[in-house]
Structures are given as structure tokens and as C-alpha cells.
Length: 601
Image (cartoon, rainbow, N blue to C red):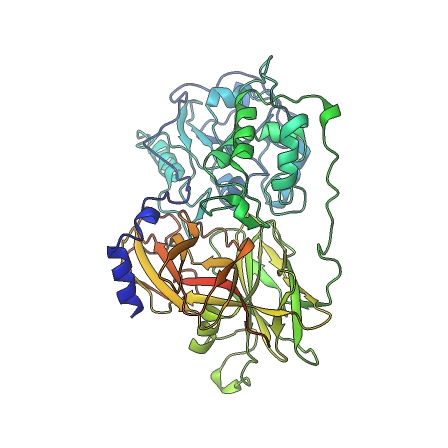
């Protein structure tokens, strides 16, 4: 029946607007857009200082091929390539380029030691060499022949970029160029555009327009919307707390604002409808872009707002209960990590009412998201099945159904650890039920371990209304091979009056768009949440400022769009049909929603 409903709605044109929406931004290495570069020219005799105390002079250059790699310890794409650079150091001489737009040399050297990198840095404080090379991003590498002529520039390969991560590279640009040099053959692809953090290496202008300034305008916006992540020890890859930090990253800041990558917020329409998000108003986004384009004036320090006193530890205060993962989880240095699932049992004397949940990770720069689900008590463990508690079997169909219908309990995403439920509501935690954590880690070039913790805040008395997270979902999805726009639909019919409080759309790597629509009992069709460019890298909870009243007989329709084509760099296998499943290689179609019944208990 749901599949018939899907076809009917697609034919009626409901999906047209989403199909016209933009896909999430993915920065792929490109061989079509070749940046300006001095290909074929000799490395100039600039005479720069190296971090080992020597000077970069012609007599110090290797006789054979050598590599100059931009190394930015604060850029996530650059960090992910650390293991690759470590292996490259064993194959040819390498120099790392540290421009004035990046970290201090001591920070860069500590980062290099942590990742096992031993080659010296070129201390390009004035960015003179970087400008000659035509550096555009922190992912750039430059391969020189034995005559010190530049023979290749661009990406190492296509495994990592902004907005995507592959299990392994599909194109090895640098490796192919190096093989050509060693065979004394022409380099077939001599230039690519490397993904990474974009850099603006132009000298600071002598005069700037001053109608917008850091101290007077821009710092306030970043305090409210960015610094919760972009400060030391948090999920943001680099701090954005001072003028110097933001000026050095101004090109990257402008890119992520212009492409609506940051702050992560993907709901179409009025952002004021939602609460708790980091979304920027249109005038705030434009103000930052205009400020950068005008020269990024510093302004008068007397106009600066007071710095924010960020609370460490538990944001909601000490929880009533803290539940920890029973085992440490491993995060590899590179590749793509499949979702990990962890069971955490509860041992409370009776049922509890939870009014807030806060989730912590020891590795905020690796933990992309942590979802918490509520499941019934586990069946007795059967030792005959050959498994141990440390090697859990795949979830049963009933457990999958629980997660897909009413199991969602809370979530951690970068910048949002604490989730408070609306006043007068709480979620019921039955006695003996357990938490199931779904953890998505992203490698950053360094192997690590993590033990997530869940803090629960209990209501002092039963709430006025129970908050439930239900779902319009389908476990019977079938996404055809190589389909760039495939729609799946599900619905939930309300048997009583109540209120919708928020939404949490959930898909995996092929997710492209999601929409919730309410068909009222009188036949009216109202769009409640439209996410035309769903980004699977961000599992966001959209909480309404004002709840939506729902009458019995209404239906909530959820439509999900998927990109199973080769144009989606996150796609693990475009050539196969995709079904519902818990792993990242499979898909989900779950339209979670927060619901409060008007029924008096």
C-alpha cells in the first residue's frame, strides 16, 4: 500500500520541488577546472628557512623527484591524509609547506610528531612560495622532477574531501604522476583541484571598507552561532574566537557560508520557526560574507562584546544518572568507519521520567553523531550461538522495527550535546529497558579510542504529558541501482488529538532530500519540514518553537529521496539495489517525530 501511495504522490507532482533542490555540497578533485600553476617551471631560489634550521637552497634539493605538500594541522581533510603522507615519506623526499595563514610552527611540529611525520617544514610566513605555487587549499601537493621542475600539482587522490569520505580512493592522481616521472614519461594528468580548506594568500589590503567590523559586528554572530564548536577541545576543526583566527580562515569561512555548509542547518523556509539550532539568519550570513569581501576590517576594540565563558563538563549540570559504554570503541586513523552499535543496560528500581539527555564523547573531533535508542530488555544470552557479549549479533527484525518506529530517545551531533524536552513533558524510561547507541566516527588521521557516556536528567514527578518519538517509516525500501533521484514514502495516521513538537529525519549515505507533510482531517496538505538538500553527515533534530496541533484522523506523510548514482561520492556501491538495513552500506527511511497526546492519563 505504501508503495502505491508513493507512486500516486510522485505522479501528482508532490516530489517536484525536492527534485529541483540542490544536492549537498561535495568537493571532489576535478581535472576539468585546472588552477593556474607554474607547471614546467623550476622551483625559484627563494631561500626560505626550514624547520630543521637549514635554508631551502638549490644545493639542498634532492636529485630525483620530491614532493612539497601543504600541511594544515587544523584542517580535517589535511589531517585525514596524514597516514598517506607517512607512507609517501618512505618512497620519496617530502617537504611540508606551512604558510602564514596556518598554525604556528610549534603546533604544526607537534601535530606532525603525533602522526609519525618526520620531514621538515618550509616556513613560508610571507606566503611567497605558496603564491608562486598557486596554493588554493590545504589539500594541495606539488611533485617536482629531478630538475626541480614542477610536474604535477593538486590532489593526492579522491578518497577524502569536504562532505564525503570513501572506503578507498578510486583515482590515484599523485601515484600516477610519480610513476610517469620514474619512467621518464609525460604526466597524463598534470593538474587537479585538490579538496581541502581553501586559503586566501593575498596580502592584507592597506585600506578596507569599515561599515562592518570584527569587533563591532562579526564577533557577535560567531559567538552565538559558531564558537560552540569552533573552540579548543570541541568538534570544530579550528577555533574562530579571535580576529586573527578568523582572518586566517576567511576564505574557508566564506566558502562554507556561501555553499550553506555551515552552520549545519538544512531546513528550507523561515529559520525562526525552529529553536535550538545554529542556523544563521539571511542577514547574518550576508554580513559575514560582505565583511570578508570588504577586506575584513578589525574595528575598534572598545566595540567588542565580552568573551563567552564556555562551561566545561556537563552543560546541564551533574546528571541524575550517567550510563557509560561497557567497552572502549576503536577509531582507526583512516578510511571510513561503519556505524558501531553498543548496548547499555539500565538498573533503576522503577520506571523513570527523563526530561533531558546529554551525550558525551572523549573524541568530539571524531564522533560525528551518536544516536540513542530505547529497546526492551534483551532476551537471555544463549551461549550456543557462538557469540559473546563483546561480539553482538545483528539486531533482530523486531529490534530493527523498534528503532524504526518508536525507539529514538536522544542524539549527539557537533554543537548539540544536551537535548531538553519541551516544558511539561518527559520521556518514559521503563524499568529494565536498555539503551542502544549508534555511533558514527570519522577518522582524522590518528587512531584513537572512545567510551561514550549518556547523562540522564530525571523529572521530580510524572510530567503533565508524555513525550514520545514515533515515526513514519518504511522497512520495505528498494532503491534501484544507479538511480540519482529515487523516492520512498511512508505515513503515520493519528488516532487521537495531540501536538507535533519536532522532527528527526534519518537516512544513510545515499540520503538526498526529506520532507514531512501533514494531511489534516479536513483534507488540507501542509508542509511541516522540507529538507531539499539532506546531508547524511549531519543528523539534525528540528524542534519547533510552536507545536503544531493535530486532530484525530490526520496523516503525517514522509518522503525521502536517495542518490544511488556515481555522482554521490559517499555511495559505497552504485551498482546494486539497496534495501533497509542498519549498516552504512544499507539504507534507512525513518521520519521520526516528537508527539504529545492530548489524552489525559
